[in-house]
Figure 1 (cartoon, one colour):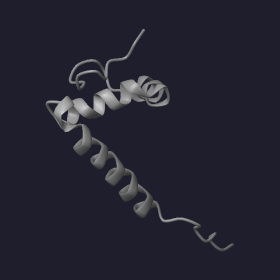
Figure 2 (figure 1 turned 90 degrees about the horizontal axis):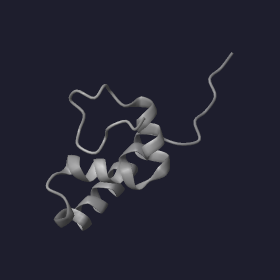
Figure 3 (figure 1 turned 90 degrees about the vertical axis):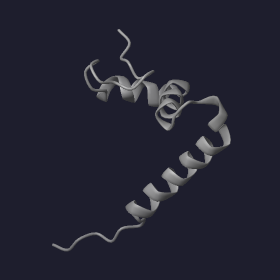
Figure 4 (figure 1 turned 30 degrees about the vertical axis):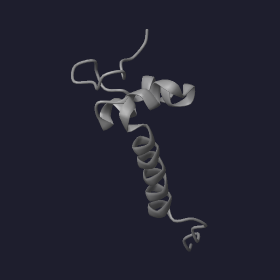
Length: 71
């Protein structure tokens, strides 16, 4: 039983996503006091990301601002 050949590069895909996110942060830098605040706002702006975070977020203690679970 052989392995199936990949049709994409996971590492390259991750790098592209990070570059895109970093470019958006640089463009909107004046709106946020930190990169962490930017990430929290980005999560809260997108319904899919917000829903995912609600499912996987850590307990309330130590959460980044804006990343709290909603009841």
